Image (tube, rainbow, N blue to C red; front, top):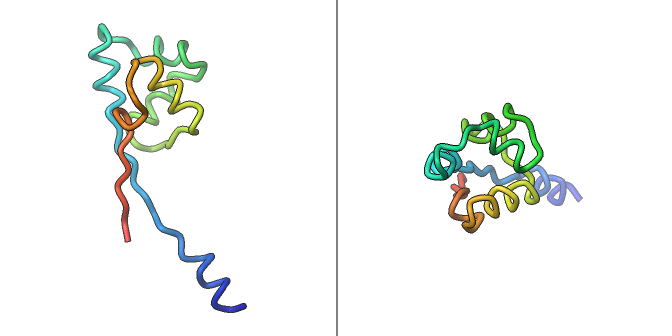
Length: 82
């Protein structure tokens, strides 16, 4: 049982990079507020995602991708750390 607990505590950390700001600016220089209103979150949420301080839920990531008519992977990239 001890090894099981040890394995559960070994979490793999991930960094998520994003190009949300670039997509926003390509889309006729959409503001953070405009994007936030389109996807139903606050401007602060969009800002936090762009700064890499907040990883969106799967649902929000899908809404953001749909807004720009791109795949989720076009906006968010996963970097694995050991």
